[in-house]
Amino acid sequence: MSPDKWPFDTILIANRGEIAVRVLRTVHQLGLKGVVVYHAADQGTAAVKMADRAIEITGPTPVASYLDGAQIIAAARASGAGAIHPGYGFLSENRGFCEAVEKAGIRFIGPTAEQIDLMGDKVRARNFVEKAGFPVAPSAIEDDDPATFVERSRAVGAPLLIKPSAGGGGKGMRIVRDLSLLEQEIERGRSEGQRYFGDGRLYCERYIENPRHIEVQVLGDGQGDVVHVLERECSVQRRFQKIVEETPSPALTPELREKICETAAGIARSIGYRNAGTVEFIFAQDADVQGAARGAAKFFFLEMNTRLQVEHPVTEEITGIDLVLQQLRIAAGETLGFTQADVKSKGHAIEFRIYAEDAARGYTPTTGPILALHPPQGDGVRWDSGVLQGGEVTSAFDPMIAKLIVRGADRTEAIARGDAALRDTVLLGCKTNTAFLRRLIAHPAFVAGDVHTGFLDANPQIAAEPELPTDRLDALLAAASLSTRPMRDAADAIPDLHAAIGSWSN
Image 1 (cartoon, helix red, strand yellow):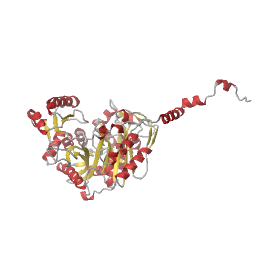
Image 2: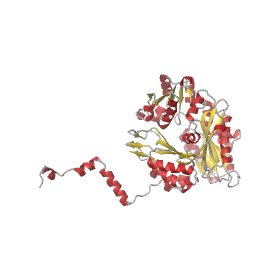
Image 3: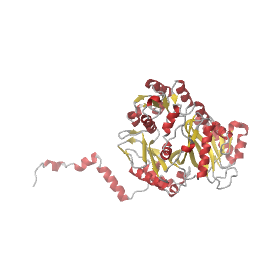
Image 4: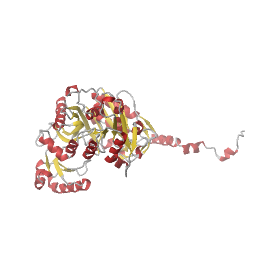
């Protein structure tokens, strides 16, 4: 559509960092105006400089300001924005915010409040998916009959994973391999769920040892049409957070790919899904799940994220589909305008999350000024970031500061391009994980595509910094010392006795 045909000419991005920059890029390509909100901690960032208008928001902490829905809606009204894009994180999956936005007469660029609510509750989502006939892991849900919960959980069999019905991030989760300990572990899980989330309800499901994490991108126009935009492999994780994502998944045969992608599209279709979303699965290649034969590949519904994902660029790179553009079109009331047969893939893409952290010290976040920033360039290399040279990495937000996306004709070429791009990335001032990522993708198991969600725990040597030879370390320390002003001044200073001689020479 031409700019004058859109039902809104201004879009407010209720987010920050690289995703705000990413959304602004498409907004501007369409000839529309983009507004951002920002906390003072983000003043001078790429998104603030790029936006047509930036409105400061406040809060007791920087994060709290981006969670203040009323303040964000007030900013949208003040700027004349007709739509709000929530990005990911913060308020992107908050039913109350979605309802408040639409009540204010502003379009929410995402699913309906009811869809957010349904898929945001793990138990409700799982029950809905199971009743719709899609695969879920064998489980027992406390809400179904609290009096028989322990008995029903024991019947699922070991190993067993206890999960809180609310919350996420791994908090409150417990693995039970000895069923004689089941009751006490349930009590501990209930206590932790209450402490972390104010909700002690639990459910138990069969624990899949070393599974793969595979997700499928879906798009629905809310008018009956839903397509999948293929899958992403997200198995390389640390602390339940993804680090490397790629597509296509090296684990899937063409038949399995079609099956898992169609399952995701079916789940989205069953709720009349609107906008972009991701259906996530646990993929067990060698799991004995309720008597399944060894070696039989199985996948089970994990959850649905009702928003754009951090890793969406790899899908864009192999399909040529601008997912943010599709989000805006759907929010404007357009139909998809293409069918499943129109979704084609070409090549292989990998995304690396660039974190300000020290992998060798338990992935501890790092901070500091960005003294120099030179992103990698070249064919098949994409850099999505919200930081600029001269800025600063603080502890106020998540340590992810950029995303490096590479594309190749095949997986081998993509890995080679990724290694070269990571090598060429220059970001001085705080420690990042680029060297760690190079070690990771050089590991023979990664090269072979043989990874799982416990891969880094099983290979702690990848995170460890290699020891430098003593002579090289001495040379680096000497070079670093001589590059500092105080040391240079001391080295170049003329002793007082010699200075007193003046210009006299013999």
